Every structure is written in structure tokens, then in C-alpha cells.
Image (cartoon, rainbow, N blue to C red; front, top):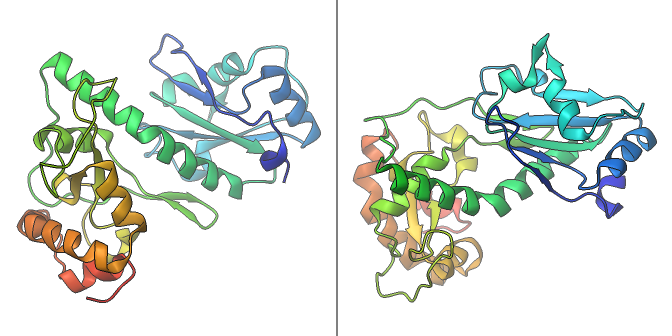
Length: 273
């Protein structure tokens, strides 16, 4: 597939356009972008932002024709329209993902990679924002309805609110919930202990619960070692961590309408209790 082999397919950060839009465009080189559009019969763009959810999924996409344009990529995107409405008015804090036309499945992989690599950066920015404004995000009380998931082909994209993860980390006082004695280092961004938020019930279990899993009760704060262990460790190492975290969060989860047993939770991590 061209998008995997071409060296030009790297993330490119475009500064805010004056209307609070952040653009992430592939590839990094503008001339290469139009060249790839021409060679592949066009490029498909997908817009991801907090304002995109009310729109039908099919309207999150635009296709750039194979004919090269004289404008730079960011200007072209800003002046493009969806349903006769300027994109800058539809989308705020926007991530733009792109692949050659006909390679729509690649958008799922790109979005997963982008979220995995950039979520920590976005969470730390939100922590700094909350601290500078002396204002924490207030999560609604009680169960929360599930936002609509979107996806590309077979790759589901589960909505998540960065503010909730930032809040969970601040409430945990920047220490690991497994043990506050775990050795940590200071983040160069926040100047606080570096810890990570982890959805205890994986978001891919979205369909097995009547309410949203993206809630603070389901976000545990872990040091990098414990976090990676939950994802990649052996069951005998994972089990005591799950036991502890389940005991800590069972009542809070129930308060958000999320009820499960330790046996169910263990099965989500690939082993029987």
C-alpha cells in the first residue's frame, strides 16, 4: 500500500488558523501531498473533533481530487466545505487524517496510532490548562449516555473526553493507584509526577454496557510500569493489580451505572479468574 511505503507520510502540525482549529495533515511536505493525490487518484480526508459528532459519519470525510491545487494544504482545507458550510465553522480543535483515495481502511490505523501517540500530550496540556485557569472539569453526576461511536470499515473509534483523564490524574495527586511508593519522574510539561490514565474496563467493551465507559470512575491512574503491565503482562502479574483496582472502583462504577464482576473484568484482559 502506498501510504505505508512512502517516506513522506508523516504527521505535520499546522498552527492555529485564527479560528481555534488545529490541523494535523499527512504528509509533512506540501508538494508531496499534492503529488500523492495525483498519483493515487485523490486523497481522502477525515475530520475528528469535538464538533464532528452531530454530523453523519459520511460527512466527516472529503475527497481531494487528483488535480493539484495552487494553495497550500492548510488553506485548502480551511476553505473547503461540507454541505455548503465552511469547514472552519463546522470543526474546532480539529485533527485531520489523510490517506490515498481507496485506502479508507488505513484511516482506522492512522487514527489509532495518532490517539495512542498523542493522547498523553493532550492530557498534559489539559492538566496545565486546568491549573492555569484554576478550573477543574466537572463530570456530570450519575450514569452518562454513550456518545455515538464512529469507525472506518472494521475499526471502531471510541469517544473519549481528555478532560476526564486529566481530572482523574489531578484527583489522584499524580501518584500511582497501585502504590504511592512507585518511583516516578517529573514531566517536563506539567512539572508534576508523570503518570498515565487507563480505562480499567477497556473502551472496546463499549457495547457490553448500557452507559458510557468514558467516565472518571473507570479511569485509573498508574505509573508507566503498571500501565504497561496491565497491557502486556502475564496473568499472574496482572491479577493482583486488577483485584486491587476493582476493589477501589467497584462502587464508583456502580454509581455511573456500570456493574460487573471481577470475573468479567478479568476476561477483558484475556484470562479467567
